[in-house]
Each structure stands twice: as C-alpha cells, then as structure tokens.
Amino acid sequence: KLAEKHGDGSARALALFVEASTMAASSKGLIRVATSGDLPKLEKAVDDLRDIDETYDNGVAWIFAGSNYLALPRPIKSADKARVRFRKAQGISSDSPRNLYFSALAAMEAGSVKQAAKLFQRSLDAPAVSTSDRDLEAFLREQAKAGLAKCS
Image (cartoon, rainbow, N blue to C red; front, side, top):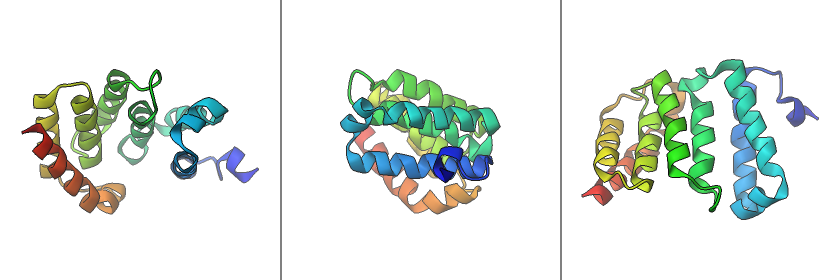
C-alpha cells in the first residue's frame, strides 16, 4: 500500500519509488515487464513525478521516461522517443552530466555519431553539481569515455 501511494507524495518519494520499481522490473526481465502490465504502472509513476515537479533532480523524470525507450525491446524501443525525453531533461539542466550522457546514448542509438560524440564530451566536461550527479559521477565518466571511444 505504501508503494501504491508513493510514500509521502513528494517528488523525492516518487522518484525513489520509480527508481526502485525500475530496478525490480529489470530483474524480472524487460520483455516480461513490457508484456505483464507492470510497464503502464511504471509509466504512470513517471508521469506523476513529472506532474508533481518535472524539475526535480535536474529532470530525472525525463531520464526515467527516456530510458524505457532505450532499454525495452522492439516495437517499444525508440531512440527518437528517448531523445525527445532526454532533451527535455537537458532543457531543465543543460549541464547535468547525467542528462548529457543519456542524450548521447540516444543519439548513438539513433545513428547520430557526431552528435553523440559531442554530448559524451560535454558530459565528461560538465561538473557534477547535484547530489545524484555526484553519486553517479564515476560511473557516468567511465561510461562517457567508453561511449566517446565508440564514436571514433
């Protein structure tokens, strides 16, 4: 019941619920999630987070929404839909290493290698200012370097 109500209803509680639900869903297998009815529940929670505060944690709701489009199998998978959502996160915080990194992933998936390289480099150059960017900094830097190498 607590999970159904997303804790205290704050953006923070809802973001934690979405993050935990995403991890739980991925442990089941993404195809199973896409076909089980769990995906609409997760998408609803992401929509709720955007409704409460789309700017929370530098636009993390847009990162959650876009990530689904990169991770799930076809016909749900869509680099273009992911890019739109990641750009919205960038609109909220254009210098977030996380937002830049995910935008780079979607650009790479869409075949825009030059754009991906620019975004991976910007992600590497961007200071980790927010708590979540600092928490993810080592991972983001390592993955952005690997992504940049793939663009060469």
